[in-house]
Length: 74
Image (cartoon, rainbow, N blue to C red; front, side, top):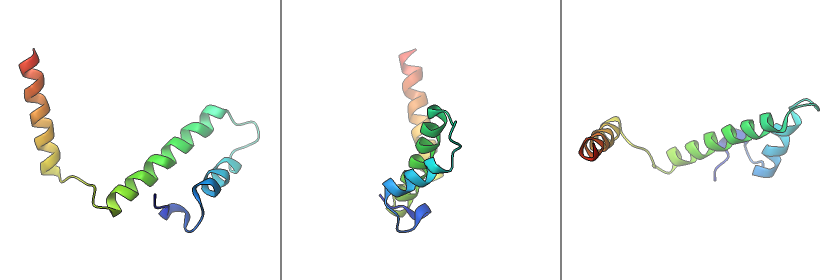
């Protein structure tokens, strides 16, 4: 996975840097939430760099298809 947000640092170094920014009395859930957000941002950037994106038209088609399927189930 590319790590544009951190230059040449490894994922482990990025995680450690992020954790070190929290106060010593930080809740583990707050740290996990921040790591989760960071991971998803990095994955999104990686997807964009690799062309794994949808156009608005493609998204709308997926929504239309899903809506039709739901209507058929009802």
